[in-house]
Amino acid sequence: MNSAAKTLNETKHYKTEVDPQKLGESIVEVSFVGRSNVGKSSLINAICQKKNMAHSSQTPGKTRTINVYEVTRGRWIIDLPGYGYAVGLKTEKDKLGKIIEDYLHARGNLSMVFIIVDAVAGPTTLDMVMFDWLEHYSLPFRIVVNKIDKIKVSQLQERKRQIVTQLAVDPSEIFWVSSEKKAGIADLQKEIAQLLQI
Image 1 (cartoon, rainbow, N blue to C red):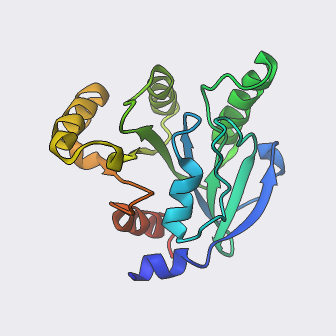
Image 2: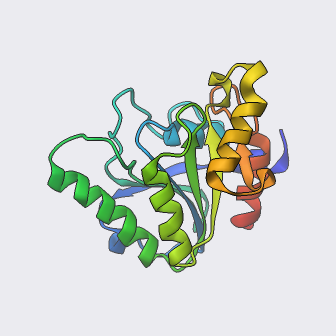
C-alpha cells in the first residue's frame, strides 16, 4: 500500500448537508461529480479502501445531498449529488442541479473537481454541459473514466480513443479506472493526496 493510500484509508464520513453555505470551512477539498449511477460512491470507497463508507445504491439518483468525508483535519473529499436521472419531481431535480452549482460557486478552498464519466455510456450531453460550465467559471477539473472493466480487453483501446475524441483532450489528462477491480486507483490516490497536501 503506497503512502497516499495509507493516509486515505483513515478517511471518515464527516457530515451531510443540502445547503453548501452550512458546510463550514475546510483547509482544502476535492469534489466528485457525475451523472447518477456513474459510480461516484463506489469510486470514493475504492480510493479510501472502505467497503461502505460512501453509500452506493442500485437506485440511480439516491445521493441527494452533499456528503463530506474527512481524510485528516480540514482536508475533505466531497461527494456531490448525481445529475441527469429523472427521480422525483422536476422541482427536486432542479434543486439538485442548484445544490451542485451553489457548492461550486461557494467553495474557496476547492482544489479540484473530478468529473466521472461512464466508460460504457461515454460522455453524455450533461457531462459536456458540466465541462463547459467549469471551464466558463475557470474551475479546475480532471476527468475520471470509470467502469473500464465493463469493456472487453480487446475493445478497450478503441473505446479510449473514442472517448478522447469526444472530449477533445489528451489521453494523459484522463484517469482510466475501475472501482470494482481497483484498476487505476493508485494513480488517482496519489493525485488526491497531492491536492489535499497530505
